[in-house]
Image (cartoon, rainbow, N blue to C red; front, side, top):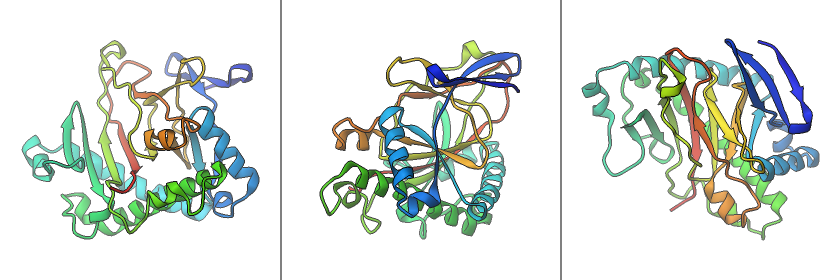
Length: 275
């Protein structure tokens, strides 16, 4: 894979297979500096959230290694779970809520944050319950650091409107979600999944080239690099609305750059406001 920078248009050019891809040149934000309320890093975060709404968050070596281990377990468990017969997966389905197993074009399984201690995990996730729930809570903490820094940078009144709407002791539909991203033999057959995210802040991991974003100003479609040792983060609809449009909830979609079917699994966390 080769890569060159086209700085004037804030994008990179990357070769994947035999395809040349235009790739979004997104900021990398250091979590430790956000936790320390570093003014340079928090300003960088606000600029990224206002401009494209997508950015990466990177971790210190210890947390990065811990998350990498959890991700490998998650991808393995995703493969085993989503390869099960449909009737087996449907046992993890729940009516009237967004969590549990869902099959609506794309298959998913979500663990609700607020029910994590009572939620029955199906195999093989049940065998890794402790690390899976630890991972869920790490994700929740990351999103809350991002939320706090954005709230403070926006200069919202104290106590913060945004943080009050995401109290850890309040009920929400936040959750850790595992997704099986279907691929097609031919790129032309990939269904259109264009959308913005509900909720407030989304974290997304995927090992494969599988996501595209639409730029805010030009509406150009750019690929998103699945960077190792980082998590992709995006602003979602609630933050855009509550910031009066100052923060940007980006339009994006699941796709594939080249022909050929392969397993693709997404691990995501959705921070959603309290009811």
